[in-house]
Length: 317
Ligand SMILES: [Zn+2]
Image (cartoon, rainbow, N blue to C red; front, side):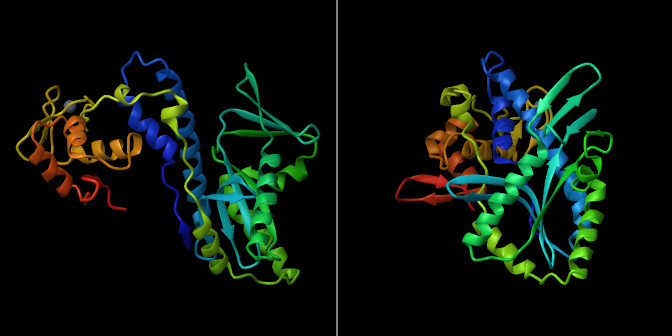
């Protein structure tokens, strides 16, 4: 079963919410767009790997996007597959063109035929994850659980080359489509060696309960001031900022489209970027409303909860 499902990472959600609300002159805008594109590429790659790992869902417990705190440090693992005999870490890597692993120097380079770039060695990264997970498990009295790891290359078109021990590398690095059968093969070996069975569901639940949400303060990171974030309801059709409130909904003055609920996204943007709560005054400003009572009605209809003691509204969890 899939015990924990991947959703769009919060830092990416924040970037996607902030970018359309910044002036084209905002100094960090191009850097933010670049960051969002890199994060989106990683996320898309992870989803591709999830698609293949899903083949194992009937026999194993799968946790996507695991984020644990171990010895004062945060550890992020793309996917954990818990079988009856072991835990498998699967790290997704999304690269175009050709990647070359050097098993002696422990380095990886990517080349598009013209430019070569170096990256952190994926095997070292995933070994670190294994080390931290092992520590976490023993701290939580989950002992004698073997941990194995794989690096899944999410793009089928990526060419993988090896300088050095190709056989050893091929045992842990593969295109995503091959990972499920590699896990099943390892599982078979463990069964033949009569390795003790583990309680995959129970262990999965313990890990799930300890998982945190990965987040980043993009407001601080890109020096965004509150007033840099332009208010207004964004048109779902053409993206224009500042839909007009009309009876029962919103109207775009550019493409003339109408929407009943375009404010839901605007309120979600507010909670994501500005504050985890909103006052009536702020709601009027951010949605571009002239009436207090309309703001109250919209917030109530949007499922927000009124905190009387603070005179503010919070989203329903
Ligand atoms: Zn429009």
